[in-house]
Length: 292
Length: 285
Image 1 (cartoon, rainbow over the protein chains, first blue to last red):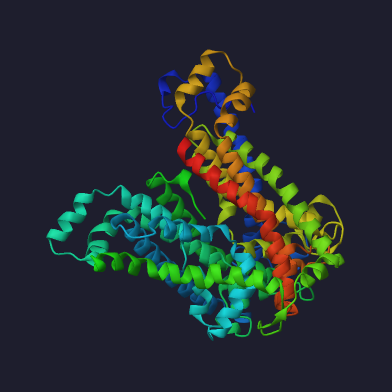
Image 2 (image 1 turned 90 degrees about the horizontal axis):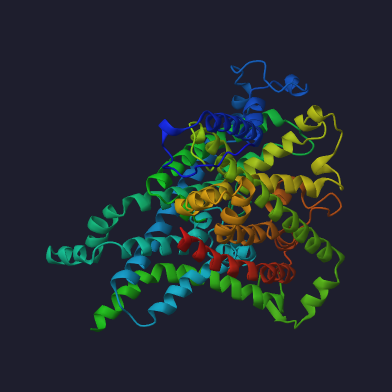
């Protein structure tokens, strides 16, 4: 690559002074970047193409399917496993799990910003401390807890371990701190209580951040695999889509055309969410502050 | 006065209850389990002292799992850093096609772990996979002992590219223009600018990504659960896979607890450091 980064920065819009050399470099870098980008997303392209291939076409080295009108794989995948039901399960778990998590985070952030109380710093770090403990190492004991609560194979059991959103709490607190305190006083004069203030005044003001956090949380839950797999082990109809697609084949039964069709179906919502997330991050100038 | 003190705690209560029930309690329980006899229902059946630890450390598969996890981390971290920093430098300047290739670079992050596993399992299938066809190879990939771990590595590296690329991109674009203009006037060349100015300035982001990736790689388990079942011949058994297999396969909760704690201790330092760098990273921007 030749001198691609001479005038960096989003505001480098000086079209009048762009030299032909710079323009040539820009074009060269763009072509290289596009080529690398296509290699990077090759697995996704492969998946989409593969989903339209007939079993016979799968036995040949050809990359492209004979026809993109061949929907047999999708039809068969939907028959073989109840993928639509799994999508519904995923949606329920992701939607309610994220909503509850965000609600708890909003309440906690509200208390930290608008109230003084004993041990405030301690509780703050107590909640942030949950981020130090990777969820993976807690799997076995959480599984036993959830089974004791008789929540195996239930939606609540699938989402209950995600209700603690420490990083969400942290980001909401930062945002709430920048809301003028006069708003709270004015709301009190208007007779709003705490909940009235939160839902009628505070959250509407902070809507962009809420949207970003919601989409992020939704994606995380939508994509999660291990916990739903464990919790729904004995009830196939409760599986999420991400668990469901892994059950479409086995080593003995190499029906990859069906698997790839199932994966394609599962990826549609992921891509939509990805686009929404990128847009909302950019709108909020939050791109640098991504949190998991 | 008393009422004022109670109200905020009421707002804190939900998150506190769930923090304790599903994070702190299970963590304490993992520690307790690792020193105890635990039956298949997860009930404590007596104190075992260090016996569980002695048992785990003497098992051959523990050393294998530890080695595999460390190998994954040792390769994944530098390779991911190299690829994502290179991509970010390439994409840094805004050009007409920027939105297109930025999206291409970031797109892998939208694919879920299990979807990626199924795609790679198909692509790398020895008999039907496209990779063997295209490169004229006859490798077993996930199915052979020599290549299974490497195949898992390729998969996990691919999964991590999108997110880290976006972090580096925004860090590079956050460098104040004056600094770069000054260096330009000083006649600094492309490589001097990259290695002497840009990379040092985004070093908090680099260290942050290094630490979080180390932890993620060390705790890898999904490809093993979905594709390889830790095999062939334990070649892809990692610490987290061993925990999963001993906890849910054979209901040996004390063994699972010891393995989980080992992984936790190994990752703790990097987790703490990642918080330190995260804070710096945000300040720089």
